Image 1 (cartoon, rainbow, N blue to C red):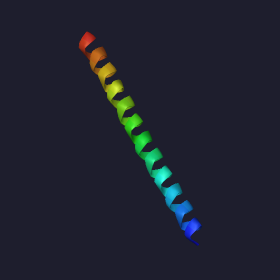
Image 2: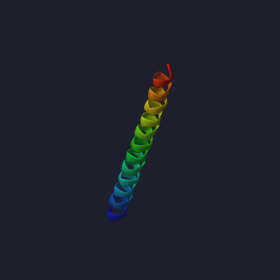
Image 3: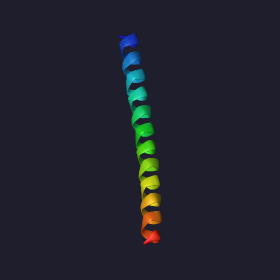
Image 4: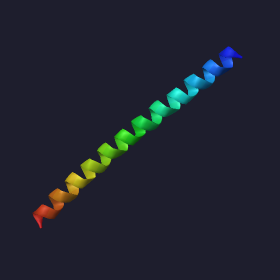
Length: 44
């Protein structure tokens, strides 16, 4: 019983860390795209 709870807790923790990491990488990608867009707009 205790091992099952421990495994579930570890699984939830890993999923949370992965979701936070993917969110951070998506935000970085979005900010880079916005910088590129601003650069293109300033050229015209």
